[in-house]
Length: 154
Image (cartoon, rainbow, N blue to C red; front, side, top):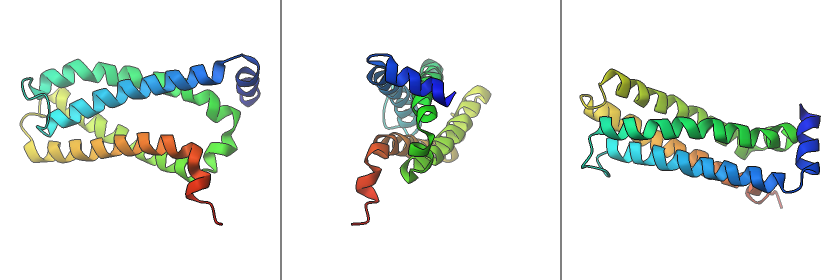
């Protein structure tokens, strides 16, 4: 699989920037959905709509963005796994992503159970933590390319 990714990325003209563009568009779709859901649960945005309506409208966008990002980012990871797996910033991204997915799953479950409107402070705490985890995932994803600047010894 590594050889296939390397061959595709190096021999198909324009493929790396196309995949990166798709990855960034997926990021925009995911972040817009996640931020609006969490800000609504924190009562900071979208107050004209109930949290249930907001989550019903935006969770499908969030869930559609995840496979777009996975399949557009995976070829880069498979082509140069050492570049990513030995990069501490990528490990931060992976950790924040796991935390964001876990917290979003908690919010999704509370939405499905109808408890999102009844548990005020626990849901707000989960929404705040999820919002921070998504922001840190995006930020660390952008900093992967700049790890040399962050961890340069000299």
